Length: 397
Image 1 (cartoon, rainbow, N blue to C red):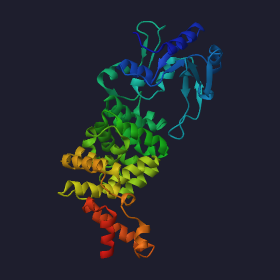
Image 2: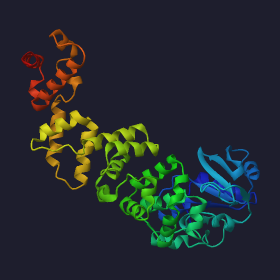
Image 3: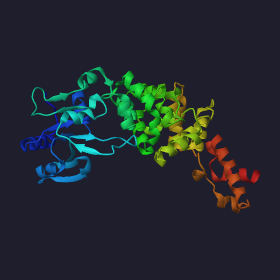
Image 4: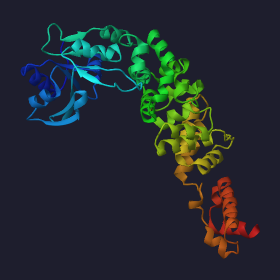
């Protein structure tokens, strides 16, 4: 079988082979190649020890990425490729990292330590037959669209609890299904996710949300108690609307938190270490969620713009549309209001605090209250946003 890997990767496989070492393409790069998907990175497993790998590529730029774990990064045509010595992991004491790593000359032992069958294959252009080494039925699972643990799921998840989230993430990204025994293992071991860093959890959750098969994957996570373990505030009730939204993380997170409060969503996103920008965007739209959409579409959208700003107003209507509400007339009105440049905030009001002070309004909270009332008037009637008209209102107060 021919795997269309870049020449920069083929050069490395050939160099190791010619030096007398085994070398195989492994992991996600092989899985994606077999699926006809473009790999994001390329990984090689080899019988060469780390110092032997460095010697083979003495004329290449190399980075000693993790020598104690057997990994050397080689830059081939400026492409970074991780080359890792076959290894056996020791006991996992923290549900994340092996306490020790020992090197082996056996590819079979190296593949046996991996997480899922579809990621536990290897390929070499110099091996016999079609070059594929598949000890655990990875190709069958690829063809069937199944995510299955190598060996016993509970053991795999106890070794590294992050694998629980990776199972659902792969299902979402690849449009696969997590098979029943693997899901049962995930349910049993879900509590171990408390040991995983928030950054790792948010990364996997983000990728799951953005996957093509996100609804099914997240529904399975909820059914298996995994979603509640990593984010109790998340709610499955709005998940059906995910395919109607663009693949924007903040929008999809807002849908996940649609049935909770803005404050609780902010706390949950903070605990998961999501960026401030994402958190602010999610909480801004959730703060608008319960505002009524009135019969006067232009007035309604001006009120939304005042309350949350342009991004939040657009996000709210996108989310309501995804949830099946009829919002086309509000979207049209939003475009009209924006194109016309209606004033919806104090920064664009035709008068300011200095004007009010000159008119005798005491400085301090009184000016703020008057400016708010003037903005109310302009929201109701945009033609009122003229200095003369607003000062007439002030004099009439």
